[in-house]
Structures are given as structure tokens and as C-alpha cells.
Image (cartoon, rainbow, N blue to C red):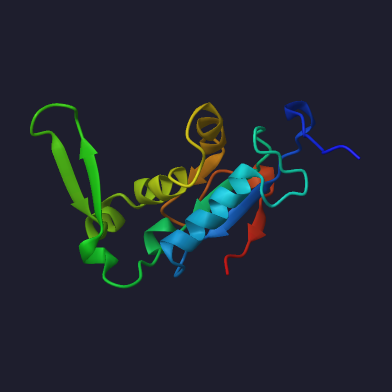
Length: 143
């Protein structure tokens, strides 16, 4: 018996939607990364992008547990001397909730060409509205 290896031509993709309201950031991000990689399918192959499309809505209402609102920091550097910008999680969730979720999911995907390809199938929205109704996304529950 041989090991099954999926080909990129044989991949069938579905659309899933996750409602992030009152759910911890990490739980939503791990569920999304799991689906984007294709680990929820029996045909999972590590070197093939066999994942599905993921829509995450209500990101502005996501929850951070413990003292993360004050303690957690997000760093950016422009590459120039003195170009470090530090933002707290509280600032990020108030002003940039979409970027906060995208960073969390992107950090859980593989690094390199394959991870960038998987990341393109992620769509994040701060509110309840999204523009993917035509794809008929399936509601995905997060434990």
C-alpha cells in the first residue's frame, strides 16, 4: 500500500465563515490556520496547498484573556534608526482589529512560498458584514 499524496490540480475548496464574537483571539486564529492549511481534510499533504477559504467576521469583538490587553505588545520597525513602533494589544483591538487577527493567523502558517499562498485565502472583517455571500460559506463553530 502506498502513501496518498494529493496533487494541487485535484484540490476542491470550500468556503467557511467564523464568527469571532466573544471568543479568544488564539482560538479563532488556530481554527482558521487549521482550515487554511487543509488539516481538517483526510487528504492533507504537507507540501500542497489543499486548504479552504476562511472568512472571519466580528473581529473587533474578539476577547483577550488575562492581562494581555495591557501587557501584550506589537512591534514594527521601519528599518531606519529609531524606527521602532510599539503598540499595545488594547490599541490594536480598538484601532486595528483586522491587522491583529491577520498577524495571529499568519504566524501560525508555514513560512515561505506555501504559507504566503495559504494566507491569500484568508478574509478578515471587523464587523458583521462581508462581501462573500455568493460563495455560500458554511458556518464553522469554534470550541
